[in-house]
Length: 285
Image (cartoon, rainbow, N blue to C red; front, side, top):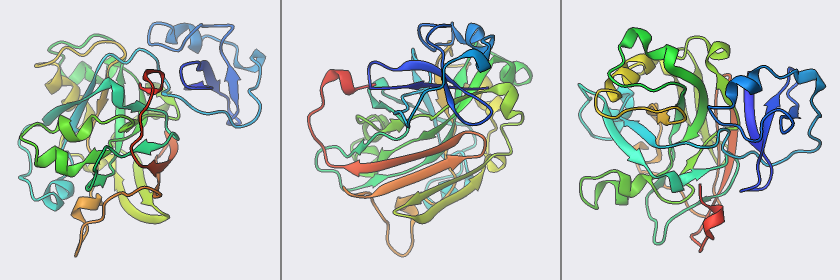
């Protein structure tokens, strides 16, 4: 099943996507779409729900994300293009909750940005508490999967000390959605095609089968160090083709650029890149 949140930022309503691709309003069934209300949303009679007319804005598809745990360098070719060693253990970092963004909302470069970059990634939404979870039981803890763009500012990531979060947590740098797709509909998360275009030119083409550490391994590993709670989001790395790795010269995002990215079964995102401007608190997250 595909779930979403639609409408003006801060006033999103819960929705479900029917077999014809139409959004149905779930407001009469659940007040919000969270991990806690997901079971009730799944039980809804979809055909009886009102169709949402037009093309509403999509928000982050699940409310109440508690933290964003990210995995870096999880595709061998991406590690090579980044001139970094191929990991022998998963590389973990965190993205700020204030970086959350709707899937088609503008991506805003930070002040003075010179090295903005893109990363199409498979996102995993945790459905049950994970603490020292075995690899064998890890996938049973997944509520669903989402498409994520792990937008990055490489100079801040790599030249401002050793903490990647400085280049990963800027406002708008984590577009999520359009849908939360339940685990049963995805099946095997290790065989999903993925791509990303910038200004209509293909930059990334990949498949989740080439991950160094698969989703089950990642959940198990992370749960040794950080308790994963219902609603948490884990993003799992990107295939090769990021701007930083382009030859002979790197390509970085600038205001006016457009990004389009997709993962099989998880939908498509499109974002316009804009310069920094002051945002109100209601626009964040």
